[in-house]
Amino acid sequence: MIQDIAPHQYDNAYKPEAPDRKSVALYYEEGKCLADLSQDEIRFPTFAEMEKIKPEIYEEYTYLFSIDHQKYYLITDLNPELLSNYNMENTEIFRHEAPRYRAFAGITGYQLYRWYQSRRFCGKCGSRTRMDKKERMLYCEKCGSMEYPKICPAVIIAVTDGDRILMSKYAGRVYKKYALLAGFVEIGETVEETVRREVMEEVGLKVKNIRYYKSQPWSFSDTLLMGFYCELDGGDKITLDQEELALAEWFDRRDIPEVASHESLTNEMMMKFKREGSV
Image 1: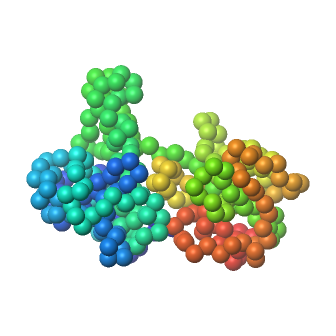
Image 2: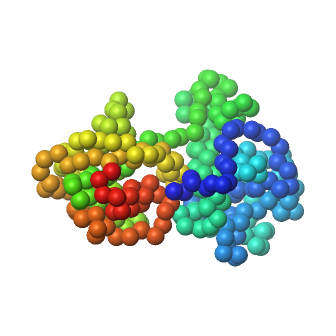
Image 3: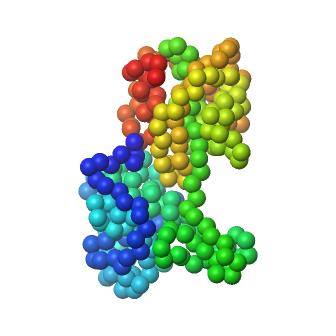
């Protein structure tokens, strides 16, 4: 999956240290990231490259994380056209471009960029927020309100019935391939209750024997995904929620379309059932 970058090591501890010339500078504009793909792999600018067009870069930065002890920083207020070797690329490239550890860095940085952009002012009193020096937190000096990075819990649901699995396609989205049922956890419910509710809402089916599989950070939507397998409980007639899904249908596991990409929890769960059957 996208976060599986071994042998590279990701360290998200908040260490707001000053960058050096080898540090990576991540620059974003809505939906795009400054990157070089000309050598068939992702490359981000270093501070050594950036200092030529933005001398004050060592004074205006936000620490993000490190990978293999190389530090990554968020920078703003840049004219990207001044770096001729780099282009503003759609962040969707991080779904498939290599090397995977840089793709993971790029999309994780974008999640933090969106959070910093949307929390510049206090949601309680409207005052300007400030960065904390000890942890990744924004606080309001006026009213004391504190904001931490936004993470939305959600479930991925593989509904099975013997050698069959329920697969669906989203309605009104760019992504047109088969997927599993999914939904966000609501206030006051457990993730197991979310599984039951989402299956009933989207396809009108009951499920039982809910088993947790594994989780995945999914920075494209600020989400922490939790994967579950469960079994059909009762009739298999689908009542489709057409606002959420374009279609939903049962597949024999041997007929599940082969997935070449390995970035998502959804794909891993589908392929695991295809190859192993009951999980």
